[in-house]
Image (tube, rainbow over all chains, first blue to last red; front, side):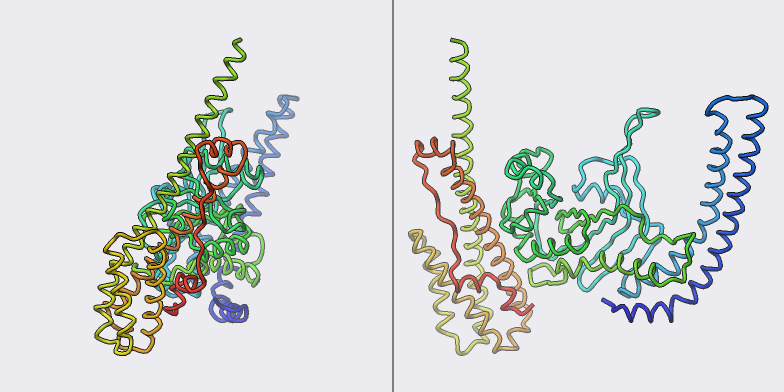
Length: 319
Length: 185
């Protein structure tokens, strides 16, 4: 991991020149966007007044033109900034990814496919709206990894009855696990036990959608997570005492909801985020060091899973 | 009349449920114990290969190799009581530990391809054994809780179920289980 000074130096030597070009681009866009908004408001307002005068009071419908012009304006703004976002990602985010590890590749528009997402068995609801970006893949030491940002939503009903539930939003990580196993082990954030104690544990063991409940010895780990598995012994072989500690540490470090599963020689890690990551800001300057630091820390946190979960230790028969 | 009948049927169902869950817990303990046995056997199976690989290199540890070969032969003969079995497993653990430490003195052996592979397999088996022991303890805990807690304890005492012992790890075994440290990860 790089120190803050190293990152600062990297920012000064490698990123600054690109950022200056992007900053120019950003200012142009902000200017255009401002014009679009003003025009939209003026036009909308004009139509609004016209309708008011001609038709008298017609209730909420007169707001309509204002809303329409704002939507059109918003669409134009997105179109205007699209190129800027792409440029930003390939110039800045890619360089930060490479700074963390040279062997990593970055694809701003790629993402983990839905089939893989479902394969992890972490989430049982199948999303019907599935989007993602910022795909990173490559090899850290002996461990093949890939991850991307994902936004998976399940939408039911239509019209007024439309209901949206977020299945998962955040970063989804896949790594090659260092031990051989054949079954399935799933580690989920513990909600029932935290709320209901022993009764909660009873409820967990009745969960029919999952495998058998695996009760582990580490009380701190157990207070954060609940484990289901197809094989009691194998679940413990995977979740060694040291790995339980490492997962607990990782959970504390991120302060986020963490989901893990061990299936088909892979480890899947889902870290839920409520914000959109690795996106440039439009209305604040790019030349600030703080956001760069944030991008770096977000990336480092995920790529650091390899070290945090000790995936590069290859003392078992799997090489 | 009907109420009394209802209560009797209700109690009967509860008793059946408790009875079945106790049997389930007992069998879980047995099942996991079987797994430990399988894994220990897997470890015994590795011994001839290990001895064959290291024999050519190790000149000063003849007695250690002798000891471990004999232990394996005794284990293979069957006809051992549980206590004898545990003793034998401990002897093997200790001897294996000794061999792994002695390996440090033979750089050629450490670099040997087939030995390296064997070493990894050994680590794997050791960790699986420790996982199975943990699973065994978890199964015993669930069983003991049922035997001692109300109301399952009533049925358990009728079935003559007694609490089972946990797997305790002796000090020299404790070092052995953490095989990764020996191999200097």
